[in-house]
Length: 391
Image (tube, one colour):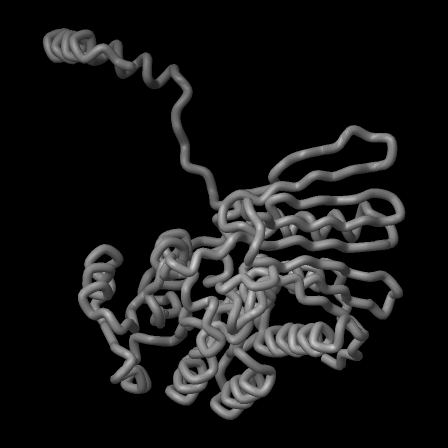
């Protein structure tokens, strides 16, 4: 740290040194190396000016939106928030003051976004049972829509959402943030390059749900949640496994693993053990649970040459990789900042919406996953019978 007294004395000395000292100082500068500007190299991804970015309305200001999504706009290069939709106007305005948002809508006047030229994209961050309605209304209002996962309560709702996007010429995406998370993207490349032929994949995701905690409470109500643990936490294992394998299952089987007599699960399943049979002949097995502690997010990919584990695998900000090669010590590392996934997802959708090109996680992907989960439930209802899947 610079000594402020010495700095002050040095300045006074220079001020009083006279012209001779100034000439000597100038000559010294001339002899010394000079700082020079350099041309812009390569093709860096420069942030767009605010007026050129796609403008977003956030629908639903719950804990996930407030804790993860809203702050991520500060790191986005092609996206900015311009409107909030909430049933709590005071909360919306308070957040608006913090984030520079001054356009507010409630659920009673939601359709007025159709005439708001300051909204290009809508992010649906509501409970699952409301996804279809608010997504379709936004699409019919002429807005592009990114909808939180799972896409909807039923495959029929997903199909209506996709039809609305096509009818109105708008983009529809599902917020599978893992497809933008740097550690998972790195793992996908290593799985392709270093594991050889994939033999088996396993996924374990779960936590112990607390019905007294408001963000958990609605997840136990079928009308709002659509389904139980598989819809909420198990879907990470399903979607991420398919992302890594790049193939879809031909059949599924599953068994419920809900504790008998647990009053939390009168409407939705507390746990599901599932298995996918892939066209390549391998299997993907997974566990989804609302009944285990501590929180777990684990994926393992086993190949003919090596294996790769991720634990945690799909968290907001702390994903890690463990590579296990034949005859080599395990390599444990992180390949990037997991928190970057949120801004990357926003900008990815903004770019697709602006250019009219395919989005990385389109509505069709969300429909596929709901069809698979519905087949899992049919299998569990039939004591684990194999159910063919056509996605």
